[in-house]
Image (cartoon, rainbow, N blue to C red; front, side):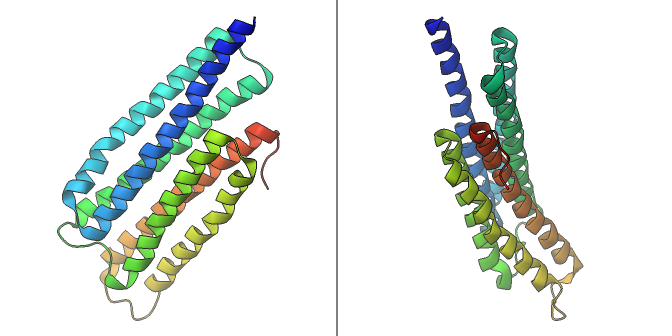
Length: 217
């Protein structure tokens, strides 16, 4: 029985490590997408777009592995909760990859021009930085199951919300002179980063629930 339990624990640990690996893939995607956006780098944008399929496939592999474990082991209580939570976290992380993909597609759409007006370069740069920092911390939360750090991710998201508000405030200024098309681009872009961060918070809160059995406030 002890051996069976040890094998099962190894499988759970492998699922957790796969989720950490997925956060690294997503973090890299958003970092490169932001760089492509700010530098009008078509090659880098195309790389992010092409690699999104790898993120999707990796997440599907995690799902298949989890479902296989459930079918074979028929876990209950906390073990089942861990596996169901892993499915949900994988879905959140896959969506984060999709949002990085959207950022890269905007960079490609406006190439060779830069989609970001000069007065918003710093804000978008900071949005990309915060997005990557949130993802990296989320990976640490998954790896360590540190509940305090999980709550910190929610607080760190406030910076992204502030940056998102800065973008919107700039768009509604009477002196905005970059046209409707640019305003639409930036409205979508702000939403991509904001939703990306929200998914990171969701993953961290799922870890908090997994450890404590309670929902983070």
